[in-house]
Each structure stands twice: as C-alpha cells, then as structure tokens.
Length: 177
Image 1: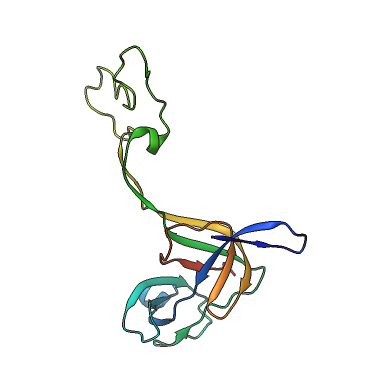
Image 2 (image 1 turned 60 degrees about the horizontal axis):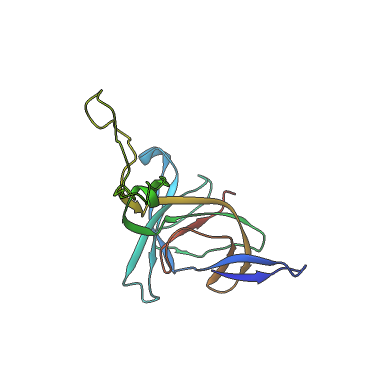
C-alpha cells in the first residue's frame, strides 16, 4: 500500500496492482453450460510458461471472444471496481485473537488467563456445532466492492483503499458494467 495526494492536498490510501498478461482458455455458453462466461488464465511472466491463476468472468452473450485471445485490463480513472482474493493467513490462533474473547483474571493465582472458559453446560452433553473456539485464522476468500481506480499506467493499476491478501498475491479485479 501507499498513499497519493488528491487535488485538495488530502492523502488517499491506495494499493498498487500489477496486471499480469492473460488469455482466454475456455468460453462457456448458455446452451452448453447454462451461463455465459469466459475462463481466463494469467501468466507470471511474459513467456507464457508459468500459469499462475485461472479465473472466470461473466460476459454478455452479444460479445465475441475467441480461445487464445489476449486479455488486457482496461480501466479508466474513476471507475468503480470489485477486488477478490484470499485474506492473509494467520495460522492457528486462540480465542482472544480469533474471536475477541476477554482475558481471564491475571492476579490472585489464577491460571485462566488466555483460556476460553466454559464451552457448554450439562445438557446437551456435547459441544454445540458453531461454538467459537481456537483454530486456523485467515486465508479465506474475501470480496471488496466499490473501490475507485485512481490511476492507470501500462501494467499498474492504482486502486483506492485496502485489498485482500499479502504482497504478490493473485487477485481478480473487475467492474460490474
């Protein structure tokens, strides 16, 4: 992330996104698949040997696409975009970090400082499904909507606000036009 200054001198938080070279590898139609979409594969380098990600985008049935056609990110300044990606994985986390539970008493010999406490009563004599406990945190699919495109260069898109995932993660950026 970085920040840029607008015409009034206020700083705006922004994220730089690099557009990878991509091409269409499959076309889905209503007759065959039940919906209209194109499947796009992105490459990590220009030599097109390392496929990084395959994503699917819904399209209008009127538009013509061909398999192998190169796809270019065409955004203009001021466009509203949606960004999809995986959030940062944080590993195994306790209940305080994962769910915001309160800590137990620290003084008077208590050893119940970062423990979750009771997980249920005498009935139903089992752990109820959905009980918030310690476990893996992060690494989930996240969609952030209504982000503005601040600037577009050759391969770099400057998007306002935060986007999901760590640095160098693969994202799906699209507009709902």
